[in-house]
Image 1 (cartoon, rainbow, N blue to C red):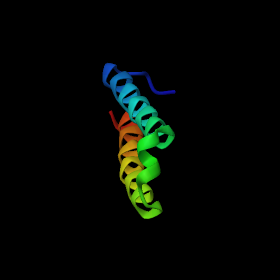
Image 2 (image 1 turned 90 degrees about the horizontal axis):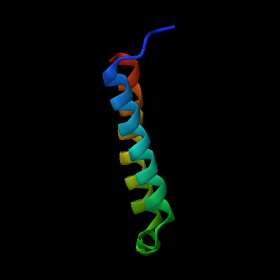
Image 3 (image 1 turned 180 degrees about the vertical axis):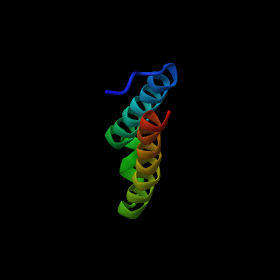
Image 4 (image 1 turned 120 degrees about the vertical axis):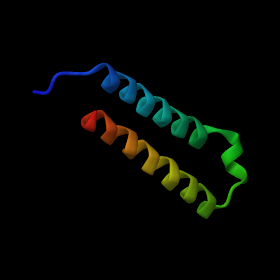
Amino acid sequence: MQASTPNQGMFWSQARELFEQIVRCLDSDSICGLEHSQIESKLLENGYELLRRLLQTKIF
């Protein structure tokens, strides 16, 4: 098992915060006015960023 580094904790917290932002966005009233394709695009963009941040926890 690999030891945890200080940076790893930072990356986990950044990934978790982005995940929470995505959930809040999907749960908000502001999303109701968007087209399905707009919601999907926003989710894809944020989802890729979330995956990138999760990967950073393993790289650093």
